[in-house]
Amino acid sequence: MSTAINAIHLGSRARRAVRFVARFINPLVLVVAGRRWMPVVGILHHRGRRSGREYDTPIGMRPLGGAFVIPRTFGDNAAWYQNVKAAGEGRITYLGRRYRVVEPEVVDYATARPAFPRYERAQFRFIGINEYLRLRAVPEIANSTAPQKTHVGTKIGIGPTASPRNLNLALIVIALAQLMVVLDVAIVNVALPSIQRELHFAATDLEWVVNAYAIAFGGLLLLGGRTGDLFGRRRMFVIGALMFTAGSMAGGLATSSAFLIAARGAQGVGAAILAPTALALLAATFPQGGQRNRALGVYSAVSAGGGGVGLLMGGVITNYLSWRWIMFVNVPIGLLLAFAAPRVLIRGEGKPGRLDLPGAVTVTAGVSLLVYGLARVATHDWSDGVTRAALGIAVVLLVSFVALESRGRHPLMPLRIFANRNRSGAYGLSLAIGAALSGMLFLLTLFLQNVLGYSPLQAGFAFLPTALGVVVGAGLTSRVIGRVGPRVPMTTGALLAAAGMFWLSAVTVQSNYFAGVLGPLVVLAVGLGMAFVSTSVVAISGVQPGESGLASALLNVGRQLGGSLGIAIMGTIATTVTRHQLASGPITQSAVNSALTAGFSAAFEIAGVIAIAGFVTALIAVRHRQSPAAGQSIELDQAA
Image (cartoon, rainbow, N blue to C red; front, top):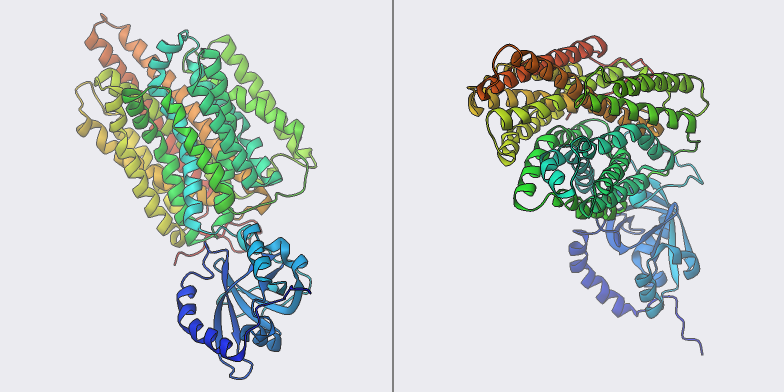
């Protein structure tokens, strides 16, 4: 005799008892049902076939393709089933989204099985549920006054493949990834003396601890951003996080200089994938307007303030632990990112297309040589033969890359992305701000330690107001940019950055931190926060979905190349002025400090000029308000 049953069959008295209990239980379950973080229980909204009243029933369900499947626990006797069957439709709230469901159809266990995890299938088999209701889903747009059209056969993405389950968690993951990338640019600088002593670095090779990361990062950014567009951003985000983690682990375990340099290169490769995909994921996750602006405020605060925080963390870790922990600290963070990304970030399949290998090779080699040549200027002279050769070959390769992209069928960097004036202006300002910021951090660290006599830890704490000022500027800009447009915060931020640099150039040997450094840093930091948010908003607004990774990569390339260029130019100015000062009299400690300060002061003036150039670029290129007629215009929604 067969014991298989299709549902739990209850008598009339038992059904009344169940309904009585449900009156008390259902309101409690409704508190959690249908939430973004609740994949097991949704809410079925149905109209009573006799009363005409609307009912909300919390019930177990799972998405399957373009439909939902619901176990028929009580078979034909369930009131919700009878109501939906009579109406032929209903509404469902699942993972924080509302759907209209139509075409109710009873299906068997084999059909419904793929929708449920193993433990739920085991429960159903144990209690004998073999029938399920399948309802085709159509997304319901909240507060829409336009009539909705239902297209038969349209496949609707349901659940986490369509949107992240928790926007706050998604933002934390994206910001943490960006912080990890930005920190590693600065955090190593403080530990260089300790690294040199323990691994017996030659003085001429020590620069490669920094340059290996910078070259791999800057050289592969465009390729890293494009791979996210082609192969899926979330997938590449995880790959980048794991590669960065592997490089960090290897760096912490390094026993020789070559081992550490190779590990730093691996970190740079991971960062080149992680950074552009993180910003592209932010653009895909947060709708354009107030939500995205606020998210970009957090992202930009991390980007601009990460350098100062890196110097502080580097000093603390090196002082109290070991230089190896500046590598090891990334390992749990990277593993956490790789674990969390598939669970909280939006899924993207990538777009069909081919990877432009000639363009990828050309631009990677060209940008890498350019970063190397500029980094070499900081330790050698512009007249150095290797430096000139590297920069010359880089220019040739980059010109060749532009020529290839203008003719290629599947270009790595479609040149139409620069057709938008606002976006091109944002890239120009990003280059200028990156140059001024990186040069300032590099030289001000030397001034604090070599002239004012600060320890690495004290110098790290001296940069803490920078991070706080960036947070203020970023928060203010994210609130007002939707109302005033991008031009005002971009130009204001550049002017504040220039004012901070010129004020900083007034430092003397007798200056103290509070009178000569703190004020300029705060003004500069607020301007940086404004500039970073506004350029990020403009760079990724209005971009075709398949090119957001490229747009993000170009923004990062501008900041990275700007940083290398700023250190090279400002370092050269500081060195030249210092050498000239020392040549005019006897060399004493007082004379050295005075000459160093004169060099730093001149370099800070140049940083102010660079910021003014960024201001002029934004003023000329960026429109005050957006043109609604332009096909590729950037639409900045009004903030609520």
